[in-house]
Image (cartoon, rainbow, N blue to C red; front, side, top):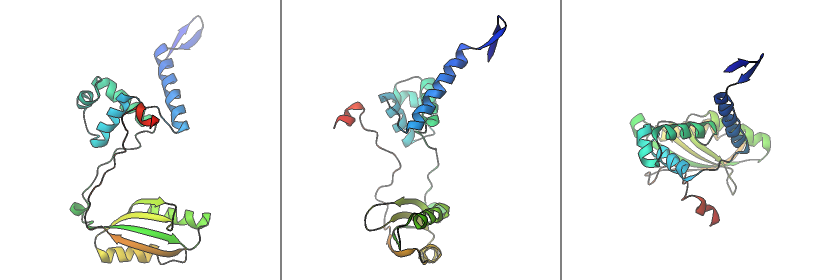
Amino acid sequence: MTRSGAGRSQKCPVARGKLAKMRHWRSIRARGSVELDDFDRRLLDALQTDSRRTGEELAAVVGLSAAACLRRAQRLREAGVIEREVALLSPDAVGRRLTMIVLVTLEREQPDVVDAFKRQMQQAPEVMQCFYVTGASDFVLLLTADDMADYEEFTQRYFFQKSVRRFDSFAVMSRVKFGTAIPLGDGPARNSR
């Protein structure tokens, strides 16, 4: 994307513009916070509901052209606002009929012990979510199992070791609400409350 002229090469204006945008979004990503306007919020709300919507469908919801919506979505991906897009599976349909919420308390809350447990949970395919928390317990886990025998096998592998003081298990009887969408509020007014 260079032009030769008068013995030297220059970047073309289009490339300079794209490079400036890339630098801008990289700097926003490095700061960890992105200013979202109302169009961004409507776009993100729509994508959180169904990320397979077409540009035309997004345009109808957001109020911009299809191309503008797709450009904004790409920019939000590059900035790290949209971390990833995944398919949500029905646990029953794939044989994971038991969902457990587990509170785990470690024997000692030392950095090496905590880090080792974090690594174990990150590698355990049964663990869908793992949170390192404040309070009486050190971790809260959300995991699935085929049945109680499968869950008991999981506990034998991970909870009956020196580093775990105790764990409390709660079997989910019904999924009253399950969501992955992050509420974005009504725009700038939400920051003043």
